[in-house]
Length: 505
Image 1 (spheres, rainbow, N blue to C red):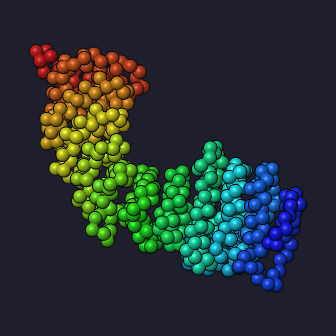
Image 2: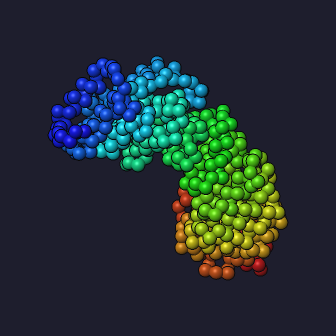
Image 3: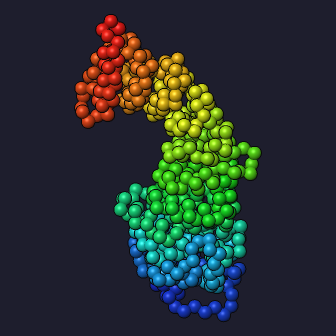
């Protein structure tokens, strides 16, 4: 105690007293010392008890006291836990004001306001799966209280305290990250995702990062947002609506692309790439993020030459997914991006080469992409047919086949660089099945052109009996892609042989 008298307090005696204190009407005649709130001391006492007595922790997450703690905090924060009240809440970012919490019960000063969240983190850590079930209830007291703690109205009540606001947001995000750190069955995870979506957690995370947190504290909330977007395509619509309506958020996202925080930038690039891959209707929003920057370097050209290889790789992946749909105007306004992308084909990091071949292959699919620049990719792509990473080889093969569709000049360049010969060689000799199949698919696409047909016809006796091997593949399972590709390829070459006559065999 404060007066040096040792007191032994047992949990079974303290817990009923805490329960009584939380349920009994409280009326303070004098303020507590150092601006503390009445509940702060009770939550601190519970935290100390749980840390010292493991037996007390067992089953605490399903106890009446645990539920009571959350309800008391909800009352202090003026949270309505019924459906009608929640549906009347203004949307995030609407500039609404909430009534001031009762600071006599929960203190906003210093770290005392976090005793409740520290207690919650302790219980979540010890009884994770029981707590996760409580996160599945979108209108339950846990989710609506966490929603309020992230709301602009509550954070405004903290008056922008440079210590308290980041601490509150970070600890709430830590609680919301638990489902992604554990082995959770897909049905439970789906319910948690639905609850987070229904309570507008993704939109609030974006608002918090853009408006309420110092930039250095945005890594965890943005990482959580990335998890939510990747886990649930419906979250994408919510995030885009929130961001598109706010120039402040758009400016924040653009600033992330140029930040020194590698984790933050790579998370955003992953989020944007997932949007591009799954939701073509949001391409205009993506272009808004990727163009019209106020800095000298345009975002894509800057990111493609970034010193961090993960950022170069994620940018190539974003480009590849953007180019799956169309040739965006945002790319036309940044003429340097294609040259930087071609440089990434020779990157020392394998993940960058893999993503770059994917992007170049999709770029070659569009007539708007300048063929004069694309032709410089041919020598590098032919070398990448023997890359150590199988996916890079497959991407390079398909990129070469797409380049073959860009006109006679590029097909002549493919022949000059021995692309058809090398693809046939890979098809017959590469030990990796996926690489052989990728090369075979590219050969089938290229074999429709007479000049390349002539090259392939002349190569048939060059090495390892390719005609026999292709015939064997064609006679395999009729359902396999390889069999179908070989059948088409052999039929085209047989037609050429028939036109040429037996003297040319």
